[in-house]
Image 1: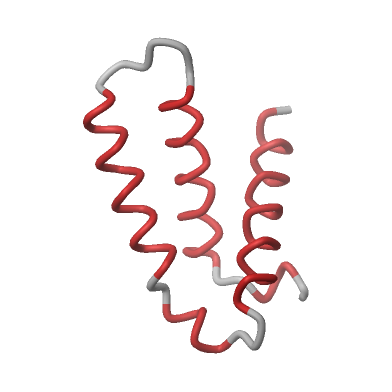
Image 2: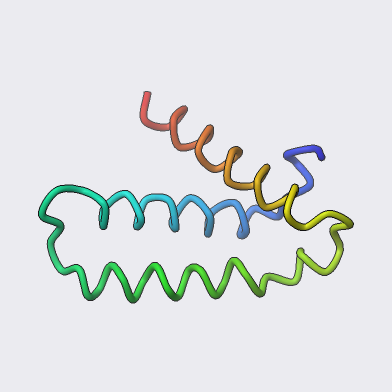
Length: 78
């Protein structure tokens, strides 16, 4: 699967999910209720995004999306 096949909003949602998850996993996170609520909201957006109706292998595509979002996040952190 080509990374450019993913819609930008889907990649951005996955990146936001990663950032929220990392904030919640940090030692002594602040406002855990808001972080958990945001994580749940982002999870629903990821799960029900219309893009998944067009992909033949959803599990593989989800894995590639997570890898792509992590890679882009690592590049931005540099």
